[in-house]
Picture 1 (tube, rainbow, N blue to C red):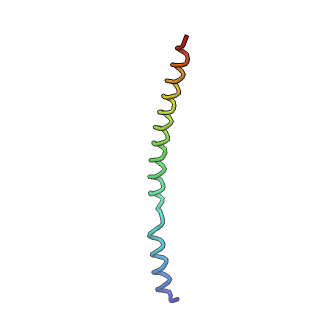
Picture 2: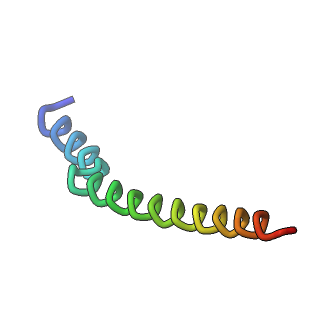
Length: 56
C-alpha cells in the first residue's frame, strides 16, 4: 500500500469520528433530558404520596 493510499484511507476513517464539540453537544442534551425526566418522576412521586396521605 502506498503512502497516498494510506493517507486516503485514514482521511476516510477520520470523517466518521466524533469531534469534542459533538460529544459536548450530546452530553448537554442528555443532561437536560435527565433533569426533565427526574422532575417528572419527582412530580409523579409527590402526587402519589399526597394521594396516599390524604386517605382517611
